Length: 453
Image (cartoon, rainbow, N blue to C red; front, side):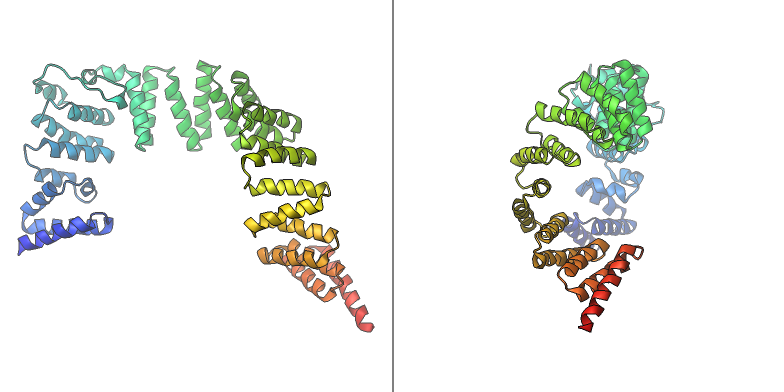
């Protein structure tokens, strides 16, 4: 009966291995069976060598189930532990694997890697080396920079080779072991204080984590070693932009494009910084440099168009947004900006055509609706203006301004009762607007006056 039950569990396990919750329950069931018959536990792991079991069972219990001469099982267990950042715990199964198969370069390489990340004194190293029967190690393991395994066996190697620690740090980053990567980069810098790539990675890590003070510290170290590297100047400038310290960002970004005149991102962000402090002349200079370097860089044309809106040069808006539209004909913001420029130039039919085209694609594009309301109101086509004003209050029923606009249109259409209702809705949403209160009183007088006649 016990054997039948065990087979049933194994069969079920084959179907549910992808479901973590049921998988856990299956393993717990195996654990329960093992209390009755310990051989079941051993049979299970020999039959299903799956990495996930380490999550649910103490590695020491699993290790006891492995066959004494199965070096692959011990190596697999060591790998599981190492991949779970349990470096010290991984050493024991790795060492058992080496005792069984001392000439395996793969086992040695991972064992030495785990050992370098572990705080445990490696007292067994010399003994394990003595077990080898071949004359030399030779292995090409690119993640460690083509380091020969003979070097890894040399105790002084890890204290003198900065490339090993740097490449190990990069590998840790790729596997998501950020703290371990930081430690490796620091070890590389202890050996070679001017190791610029290690400084770059540390700056990048801290920058990504929004630890800007630390990031700037490492970027400045790079600058002190090589001031002609444009990236750290640019990176510190970006941090200042993120912190809205635009004046501090500008000289750093200027320096980055002085070093690398074709650095398009440097020019683009320089334009952003100048634009934010209202220095539109220098912003225009920077953005024009962007599109000069790469005419297909759409953000350059977009930024030129937005800047032209700020300075109310609507001919330039049409020019620059038109250039951007050639690169992306479906960009609704560009279509809106072109529509707005036409509206300001009193090309109202063209503006309406563009705004209504936008609404066919996105009926909830509020800015287009508001401008259509304004155009029809200016043309005294109040019925059409009311139609779009109603769409606006449906989209933004909590907008005091939307209700006020609707009330004003009703007022000019001599529809005073509805005008009053719209004004009242606006006042409820913004009780401190005294001008709306006066408009309600005015429209009430008109209502009362009409009743007299």
